[in-house]
Amino acid sequence: MQAEQEAQFQEFVRARWSHLVRTAYLLTGDAHHAEDLAQTALAKAYRSWRRVSRADSPEAYVRRMLVSCNSDRFRKRRVTESLTAAPPERAGRDEAYSGVEERGALLGALAQLPPGQRAVVVMRYWEDLSEVEVAEMLGCSTGTVKSQASKGLAKLRTYPGLTQVMGGPEHSRAAASGQGGTR
Image 1 (cartoon, rainbow, N blue to C red):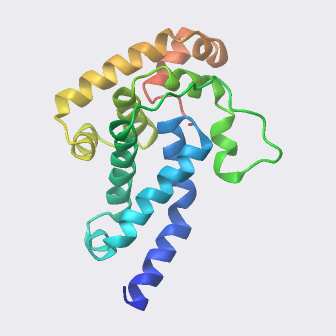
Image 2 (image 1 turned 90 degrees about the horizontal axis):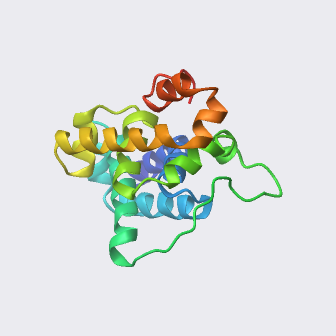
Image 3 (image 1 turned 135 degrees about the vertical axis):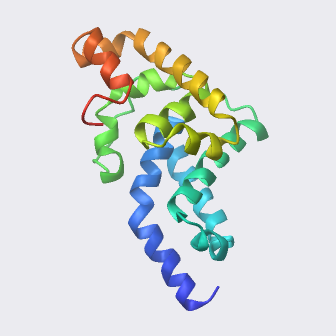
């Protein structure tokens, strides 16, 4: 890799690392898996940085790699995870997780979703991507994205922790549909 491309890649990583780790955390439900997943996606991006940097949106390209790497985790070996509603206590606060960890109810609810529904819900409502963008990223039809989002949101609406934290069923529905204001 040429020095100029190396510098571009390093700048990209500095600018997007925290965001990629947060997205990976929502996909995996585990801080360590999230960092591993972000590193794996960035390693793949590094190997093909010429192609990635020429894309209309390098960030979207790497985000797709992130989702693909997460799916690969389950294809290569069946991972038995025991996701919890609240992350374990940590000695210190890490900036990359501080905002996400405070949303324990949402993380617990996301952990109950199958990986495909979780990916659709995270990409659609956390990353605020359109149905078409999510379909392209996941390599499926927009109809699949719509049905997976619908099923995922229906499950999230029944999760008791969300209703209690958010202050009732109306607020829970607004938050689950991406209209809750803050993330």
